[in-house]
Image (cartoon, rainbow, N blue to C red):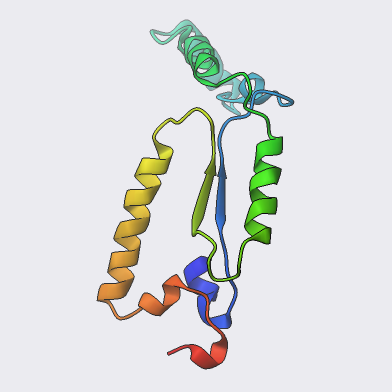
Length: 132
């Protein structure tokens, strides 16, 4: 929405939360197909046990101090920062899984595309009177 509402002077920041194991039951509910018949086929087939292996592996990747309060703290910091100086995207994830790198490249490509197509003004929220 950041690009879609920029010309109305609305600023937007994407907060990307990681996986939080403290205070949640994330892994307990992740990776379960809605169709129990499909789940049963997978449980009996050549990939039997893979979901459990994946969940245990993912659980090991997440640091013990990954607390969802960090997301609230990041949002409070964003709201306290100066208008039009806020970042486009903030990651709150202690696992450092590379998502920040992928998003940074993707954001750079999008920004370059907007600049090259004469829509660079969409990168910063402006008042409607300042819009092209």
